Length: 309
Image (cartoon, rainbow, N blue to C red):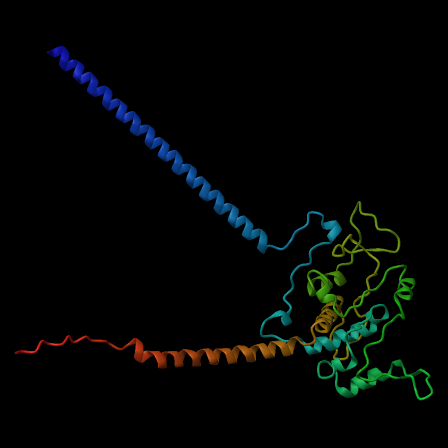
């Protein structure tokens, strides 16, 4: 009897041990599965955040010497949503372009009349245009002739063709500046940094004769020498003509040249947003007015009462 009881107890203990072992194994497997799932979710989250960060960040090239140093971001006022160009700076910038840049660079997409009401008066623009001669014709006998410029004429080129421009600049072709702000990565920041970034080459960097070191230019070697120096020109309004001031003014002028319609576009955008806001408010009012009676009505059902006989 005692032998049977001991055997029964031993079997019960064995069954209990098997159950405990099974539960322990299942719990460990569940825990391991849960840990693996958490790791997978965390890895997916990290990958998603990394992908979003990569898409939103500016492109960075490890070979900065080949692509040029990335220009810092400057707080240009005309880039603000509710700000316009500084028209005094545009006038000073045109003076810098005329006295410094126009000797090599053209401005093909800007006509004299574009300056009227922006930086100069109509009389000033007519006088400036008449300082240049333009070939026109043919006349009544079929000959071409030279005439003084008119406000409808485009600003003259410094060279007649590309070959002449290269011959006068040691093989380098000075680009047109009409859309330079849009044509270069960094826009106004790049142009300003380029104009103020000339320096001596660091140790170990050799620059070929005839070139100049500028870390913001791709490759670091640029054919254009430094052209802006303190006191190079004398501003009409008495503003000190420092290197950074001249670079800022001509950069603003070129920004305007690339987008002469920007002020009007912002003005039109504000008018459109104001009109849309008024129409949205009117639409909400009409919607509530028309639907208020339908949405707030209460429908009651009164069943017919049986007639008494």
